[in-house]
Length: 317
Image (cartoon, rainbow, N blue to C red):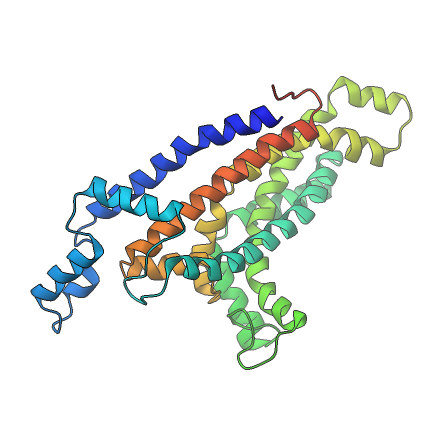
């Protein structure tokens, strides 16, 4: 296991370098360049722009700029925002935990709903419950998250006034767990409603395939309880494709966060990315992309290691 883990970590280094290099080149190719936000300001002269280019190192060749950024990133010097002049590492550190809280809780709620619904739907195939769950899954997966979020704000915030319309906490109020949960309800439900339909279909399909295996029929012949057969034997093998889907779905933690955090004014990484993109804040954009790539790669590594726990036939040499 230790050798396999070390080998995988070494294999991930060229991948991360390739991702950051491609993103860096693409950003440098955007018309206007990093200083385009300043070029429309009539109070900034050409001499000022030239001085900024020299100070930021933007007058150097692209390979030199990339190596300079990469060296600083590895050492923890992520530069400063072109807009706010704050350290990029500090900005990302303040937002990352908030996004992980929102999207991690959404994933937890999704799995707590999708796993039992998918299992029951598979065991009661073609029943009224199965048709109801399947229909709801397709509806949830088809609804745009931004539309659902706006409807929830309109109904539960503006009309019923049950939950806040946005933000992470009530301004001016002391921290309380109840207040934080009230702000999480609507964005978590928006993400979980669509994701539950997606994962439910995968769990149902995997359970239907596993149910026809010989070892399940043997367990039934032995007289084991249905709950033991489903959750201890069947689902443990049916969860393997689910783990793969979760790992491949990891990028949507941030792509979905861009939409959800913007709608609900959640101060996370997704909203930071959107604000930085609209203001051409290149250092922040590069940091967000690099951190996102790290999290996605880490999620895939965790999924590979989880296979060995779920399936004894998997061995890491």
